[in-house]
Length: 115
Figure: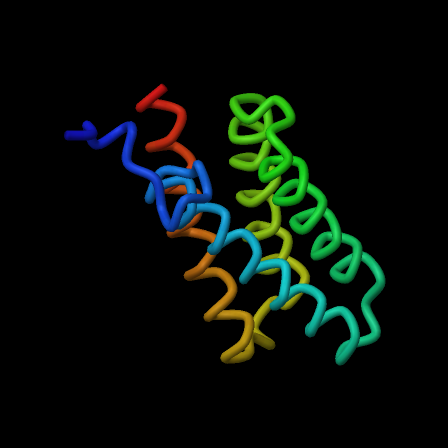
């Protein structure tokens, strides 16, 4: 019988927690691409590409612990920048993205602690 740390999701080689973190970060990448295109905001679009780049490297297996540690401040900064830049002009997509990011940060911290 596999222990919880050895459990993988659908044969991907990722634990359930890793798969959740990857999914959340990919989702926030989608939110950023959408907002970057709709709002015509290249920095937001670039942040979305950054999320996808990190997810791609993680899935490839490149320095997963480093990527996990780097994703925490990268994601947290997105929340702070959104709050400052939007300053009262918040949208439903923005709220959904920030909720996704907050849950992703919790998952990332759990991944770091677990290892």
